[in-house]
Length: 114
Length: 114
Image (cartoon, rainbow over all chains, first blue to last red; front, top):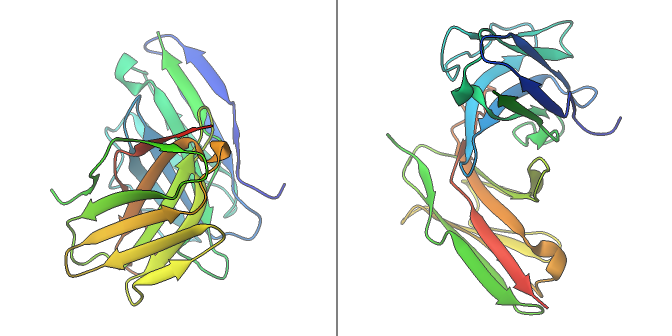
């Protein structure tokens, strides 16, 4: 597709369960970012991938959060032992076009932890 | 810590009027700024961006102004339309290598009255 895609669009899970969120960046974009948007809040940086370089994990809120990017394309954000405070919209963005700093966002995954 | 903030959390305008959304930033090292529009249930949509070596940039019906002296950013929307109703976020980054991770403000809700 032409834009960033994310799946699932919505996820409801029980406290303590693990969840996996997927992001397909724009084809050819080498940089991929994950952000979290809590209800009524702005976006909070989580993690950044660039090519084969080591990711910048400085925004991950706890060691329950991890992410990987396979083959320089698709990325998966995993949250282990989910807590209610993890409920948020998880947004993925990619960049790498002519203006390499411009990030384009996907529609997000809305996570609700019961 | 340093952050990007907004002067007005809500803005209501009449259709056809011009809108101005303001944003203050505190990180003097920031060298890239971007505005996003976010409609309910959707991901942020890129509107316009500007690098710190410029003070004005124009797009279609939108203009971004950057005043580095007072660390102020604004988004001007000409002839505002009902479809412009959304939350608008400003964000900034410091280009450390290729990592342009964004720091977002909390957003301004723009309501356009027909």
